[in-house]
Image (tube, rainbow, N blue to C red):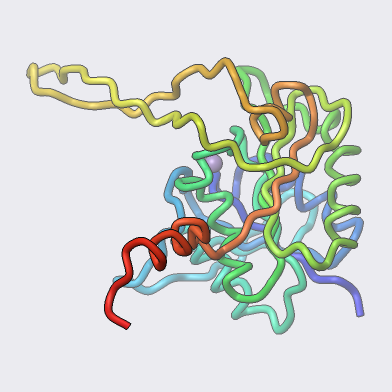
Length: 247
Ligand code: MN
C-alpha cells in the first residue's frame, strides 16, 4: 500500500513553501494538500468551534491535489484526516521563518503536526529562515529529501520539529531550547496618540549546545523529537512528596 502524506502549513495554501514540501514528499508517497485559505501564522493550536468550516478544491501549480479551508492549521489537519480514508503522516510547512525554542508554543506550523499526533498520526513540522529575497528551495531540496527519508523510516517517533539553516552542512538530533523568548512587547502611539503595542523578535546571540537554536546557528539541520505529555515529572515527584494533598 502506497504511503499517504497530508501536507499543510500556517502560511496559507498559496505560500511557495507548501508546494516545495509537497513536491519532495510526492517522491515518497501519495500527497494531498489541505491548508488554510489565508495566513494563520502564530495562531498556535487554535481550533474553530463557533462557525462551520469549508473544504474547497484548489488548483495549484505542480498538479498536486489540494483543498483550502477557512480555518486554522489544526482545523486543516482534523478536516484533512476526516476527508481521506487513511493518512500515514502529516507534514506541515515549509514555514517561511524558523520555529525554534519557545516559539513552539505559538507556532501554527508545529500545531498542525501536534494535531496529527493527537489523532495518532505521525506529524512533522518544517521551517526555514526567511530573508528579503525569494526563498531558495533548490539548496534545501536534497536536505529535505534526506530528512524525509530518515523520518519515514523512524516509525517510533511521532512528533518532530525540523528547522533548516540557510546553508546546511549536516543533520543533528536536538533538544528544544527554552532559554529565550522572542515575543518582546514594544509600546508606540497611533496617529491619534493612543497607545499601541507590537510584539517584536529580539535578536538572540547565545544558544545552549545541543539545542535546536544552537544547531541552526551552526548550519546543522535540526530535528527535535517532541511529546504531547507536558507533565513535569520532576515537579510531580517533588510535589507528591513535599506537598501531599488529600489522598
Ligand atoms: Mn508561518
